[in-house]
Amino acid sequence: MICVDLHVHTNASSDGSINPKLLVDKLYAHPIVKGVAITDHNTLDGYFQVRKLAAAYKDLLIIPGVEVATREGDLILLGVEEKPAYMSPLETVVDFAKERGAVIVIPHPFRVSGIGNAAETIPADAVEIMNQWATPQQNKLAEQLAKARNLPGVAGSDAHKLEALFTIYTEVDAEPDVASILDAVRKGRVRAVSTRHI
Ligand SMILES: [Zn+2]
Image (cartoon, rainbow, N blue to C red; front, side):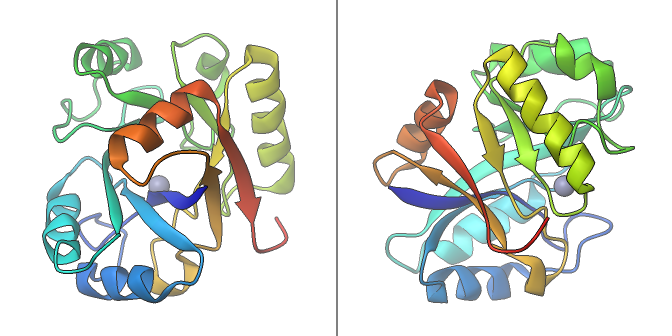
């Protein structure tokens, strides 16, 4: 069992302030969470920095990812090291992801920046059912959607500041490597965990 924060922003996101070095230090020091997906807004620059810094430590799992702004709202792709064009139609981003074998996660579908009703039908591998910036009602709707679509429910802190890191994460039944974690997410061997009241 590995605990992974599947939704994290660095200061490569225009609205993020987390320094990649401090992120790696905090991950290394954390008693439970040992992996992180870097999901900056429309860039992989933060991921590449974090991966480079984390290489100096043993046993830290850094998952490539990107939170893509589509015309319909945000979509997270995991397991890719490239990004689609900014504000592409959702359908184009799904095609982009499928061509590259990415794991498609629907983040906070019912927040303003989420994809809303499109979440009911678009091809996806998982739904983010806990997000600390969503209201309890929005998280509940996301959980119901995951159940209705029979999709795995995952969670991430969606941290943009250092103190928010790892407050929400996903327990993954996987081997300690990125490919195994992504495979487990697809297969639903996951459990969303919150350390705070949401
Ligand atoms: Zn985010």
